[in-house]
Length: 95
Image 1 (tube, rainbow, N blue to C red):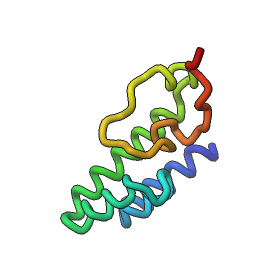
Image 2: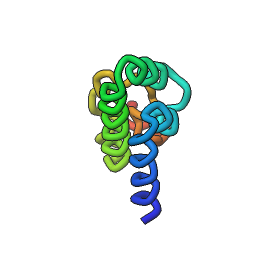
Image 3: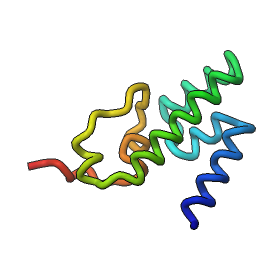
């Protein structure tokens, strides 16, 4: 239930301020600045990028760690936090 509530709050925040939604899931990195630039250039491209980042984040978050470690990185996502779904399990998949 707590995961659903936080996801809905993040979606509502992203509807109004897309860079803030990206900042909350990826931090102040390349993805955040790309979203700021897209939002300045056009509000709609900023929304598309922000919702794509959230989709990748929550999709990776619900995957098994072994499956997540063996799959390719999502295209256009530079944040390791988003690529890992917010988890820090870097040792999975190593021999």
